[in-house]
Length: 354
Ligand code: F6P
Image (tube, rainbow, N blue to C red; front, side, top):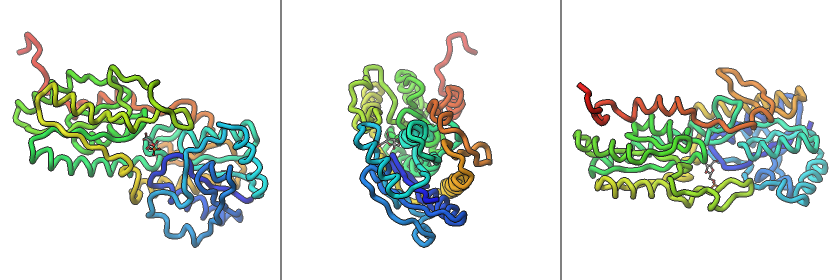
């Protein structure tokens, strides 16, 4: 079979190991892998590159994607969709391996269901918010960068006796903030799934200072909503998601903390720094295994599915099931984290308490 491989949506560490895993297994099984450049845009515009063993040999350690990516949605207009289908047939493709998050895989599912294109999905996103899989690659690498940022910010916060608010990505899921907050020893964590209790946070930060810890670190996820925020007022991307990058929620929270507590406060945003660089060992291994499995499913002609990590196993789950709803941080998991970031000895005294 001639099998197209594409990467769509935001880049993240692990894409190259996944391309490598899929390519090597496809070649082993006697298929011909073809790289499609820049996600769905490449299939609309007809941009391909050969994928050989030599080409993928050394890419295990490279961040980004050798195929390029885009946030192009071919279902936005019929002309693009038709061009995509024409190119699929003109290139003699028999199947597609689509590596991406909910948007890229959502397109793959529609192509499979509505246009009978044989697809196998591979889940990636630094947000870790895809259903059907325990983890997506890109997440562990992004969290490692965020924890490194926390370690560095701690030095400055401590030296200057400041509060520093770190804003991380994650869209509507707080996984990156939660893991970075716990792994980096934050004093407060704000995630989109749990409405922020600004009063409790400011009160706690003041108590920290009163108790003698004269600095603090706060992690906030970019998708956290303040009471006056209106997501409908934001511009939308091609897939209809509100664009969060200009909200500056970290800076706004830092300002609120400074005003309410009178404590010197700064903010830092790591932005796309958390999406670049070499993949961690975990992401290299996970992405490789997910890519290998995708190629295996192609050989078995099992289409309309996504490879997924469940426990220690790499399995196939129907794309439809994986995309049914995003995987958000459950309230209990946030409460579990609170046991660490909100220390008991700093709780307000209840009246009548001994
Ligand atoms: O989905 C991955 C992600 O990094 C989100 O966390 C973030 O909101 C978005 O992509 C940023 O997109 P872009 O790279 O297009 O600015």
